[in-house]
Each structure stands twice: as C-alpha cells, then as structure tokens.
Amino acid sequence: MKKSWILFTTLFIGLNTSAQITPVGFQPKEYIDLLDLGAKSYAGKDSCNTATMLYRSPEVGLKNIFDVWLRPDQTAVICIRGTVQHASSWLENFYSAMTPATGKIQINDSTIFNYKLAENANASVHVGWTIGLAHMAPEMVTQIKKLYAEKNVKNFIIFGHSQGGALSFLTTSYLYYLQQEGGIAKDISFRTYCSAAPKPGNLYYAYDYDYITRNGKSYTVVNAADWVPESAFSIQTLDDFNGVNPFTNIKPALKKQKMLVRWYLNGVYNKLDKGSAKANKRFSKYLGKKLYPQVKKYLPQLREPVYASSMNYMRAGVPIVLITDSSYHAKFDKPADQVFQHHFFEPYEWLTRKIYLQ
Image 1 (cartoon, one colour):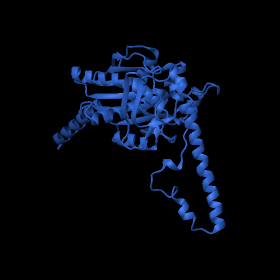
Image 2 (cartoon, helix red, strand yellow):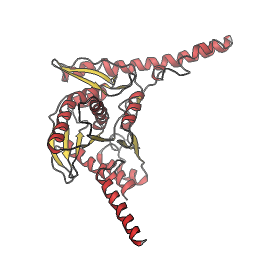
Image 3 (cartoon, one colour):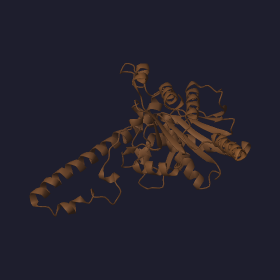
Image 4 (tube, one colour):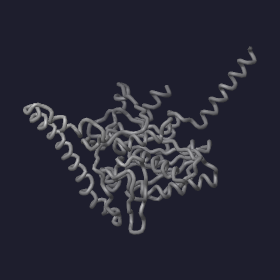
C-alpha cells in the first residue's frame, strides 16, 4: 500500500511538472514576464532574463512594431508594441469606424493585404488596427515559419498591451484562419494575452474570437480602474441583432393594437430606432471617412478601406479582471488630468502580484 501511494504521488507530481512546461490556462507569473517584454519593447531594449530576443521588426504602418522572443522552453513570444507618442500612432486608435472582418486592404500601389478574421459575414473590426495588422502580418508569418523550420518551435504566445493588445486580438484571428487554409503548419499552437486592450470589433467578431480561442487559448487582462478597455465608443442598433428577433419585426405586431396604442408605440419605436441609427451613421462618418484624409498623410498610397455599418464594439477573450482596493488607490491614484494612471504596466503588474501571487 505504501509503495502504491509513493508511486501515485510521484506520477501526480510528474504530471503537474509536465503541465507547467506548456500551460493552457491563465498563468499570472507568465503574464508578468510578458509585461516585462512589453515594457522592453517600448524602451527599445533587447535583453531579458526570461527570454532571448530573436527579431525586432522595422517600424511600419502607423508606427507599428513587433518583437520575437524565444524562451528556454522553446516557446516563442510575438510581442506587439502599443501606442507611442506620435500623432500617427494615436491616429490609428482614433480611426475607429469598422471594416468587415473579411476583406482586403490596399496598403500601397503594389500591395494588397487579403485577410479573414472571422467566419460570420456580419463580423466587423476596428479599421485603424486592421491597417496596423496589414503592415505587420506578412513579416510575422515569415518569422513564425522561420522558427518552425530552423528551431522546430511549435508553441507561440501573442502578447500586447493597450493598442498592442487590440492588435493581438486581430493577429490571433488572422493566424487562426491562415492556419485553417494551410498557410501555417497545423501543429503550431498559439495562445494569446491581450493586456489593457480596447474592444476590437463588434458582437459577431467577439463571438467568433471566443469560439476559435476556446479552451483557455486567449485571455483579456483588465484593470477595473482603467478606462481604455471600455473604449471604443459603442452604439447598438436594430441591425446589430440576429435576423430572428422581436425588435425588427415589431410593426406587424403593433398593427394588431388599438389605434391610440398603435399610434403611441409606433412613435416611441421610431424615435428609439432612428436615434440610434442616426448616432451610428454620425460616429461612422467622423471616425471613418472624415479621418481617412489624415491617415493618408502618413500612408499616402493607402486606399480608403470599405466601412461596415456597425459600431457595436464588444469585449472579447476570457476576462481576467483585476479588481482594485483602497491599498491600490492609495498607491496609484494621481491628479485627474493624468488619464493613463491606471493603464501603464506597473499597476497591472502590481495588481496581478497582489491578487494571484501573494
């Protein structure tokens, strides 16, 4: 009996040790290490205790950069830098009309980026970040194939903070569908950490993203005091519902009501419907067509993308919510004009350590 117990304990420890090499679920220590890589990306540093830098991309598009790191366990990290202090980098965020999640973008006179980010034809995504993806994705795929061929690397983590987190959503979707089409080896595995990320697309994109990354393949880490994950502006209209719903077909039902009731309810319905539809068109116009000339100043050969009708931005990924408390606010609260006080790497790391590692 004693020998059986020793054997069982040995196997249990061995299985747990093996599982820690390629973890599936959220790993707080791993996330903290990724935050460190993200900070080094901003600082332009290429040395780290937990990984070796193999590649840093040139600055492309609207100030987009990604790094490739290799850990001792043969896991590669694609680390996407977020917003930097340059007008074009901020413009990529503000250019927030939606574009269809499957389509093409002509980034210059000789290059068309064909992409698929979701299966559902109603899915749409942030146009500015799709342009960022269009400039980085081809070289990302080249680096993935190179690591696979030369070093037999099959495990990849996609990571980004802030704008980098938003781009990590789209990158994950792009690589998934490229892999389904045979553009990447089938035995390559991807996991994603989207840190402090804004919302990447509409409800149908979020549905698709959560489906293709099911079983612990993607996490969205949010500081509850950070306003950035609450953006972009979102408007839901009747067009954002599935086709079978009681709202878009309500008028036949109203006709069965008495005249005064029908007159009142029709008036209320029209006001609600027209108000949201009008706001949706206004947001799409000013955050799309009106901003395109400004984007074109930095990308003169970019053809204006096709815009989707939706502005119904939704969160995606399994949420890891970092709830704040009095000790957090005593440390990190600053004057109200410092609007990014809860958005930087330090508060995210501090909360992760406090909640998960203490």
